Length: 110
Image (cartoon, rainbow, N blue to C red; front, side, top):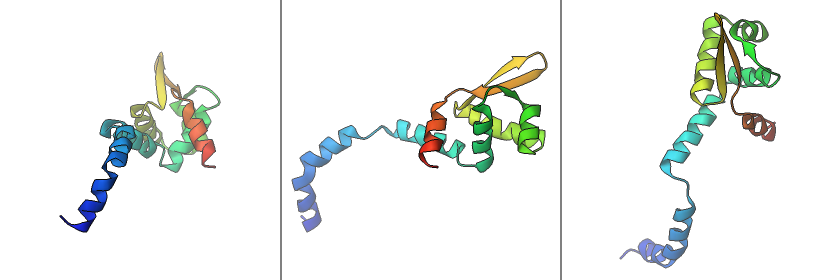
């Protein structure tokens, strides 16, 4: 038995206890996807814009100074991560924050 294995054998109870406290692979994958969704400065700005209330894509276009396709792309990513939600109103789609905890995360790293 190699020295490293013998050393780790003594730590087995501690490591087993630690491993039981670790989140599942599914949980960490979901968390990583969430952070990927907010890893773009434009998406962070969209989140801050929506912190003040519901907005449609055309309003976000003006705020962001971006084309509709670009804003819609970012909204799709945020929606997939359950950070924003949409509501159809006639021919318009309005967006709002679905999870306001994202603001706490962003403020924690200011």
